[in-house]
Image (cartoon, rainbow, N blue to C red; front, top):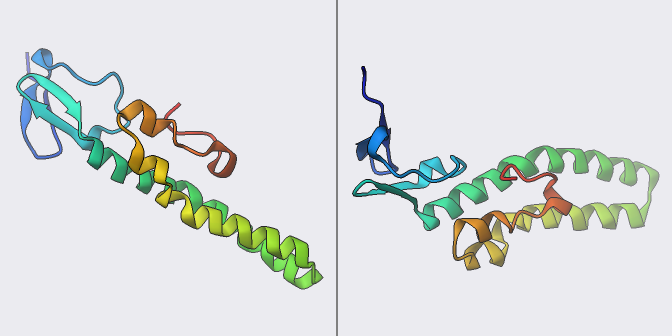
Length: 123
């Protein structure tokens, strides 16, 4: 029977049958091997989390550009201001201080702003 290996972020491998693995694979690219235990490197997980925010906000920014252009055409100052505010919030989302303050994976996942970004990919 072939052996399945799990590789961590640094390229270290372990036989999957003897490894203690995190309960989900959300931050698999942040896995770090210590003996037979695979943990999640929180610093790397935060980088991956910010990348996921950037991925989620791209279509939202594109849609908000349309909203702004319509407001511009209609000369609707309040709609333009609201759009500018929303676009800035989307741009600022990866810099949320709660992300850097997260002390574990669960608290990191809890920083996903569903009001701004929609459903969390970590639910």
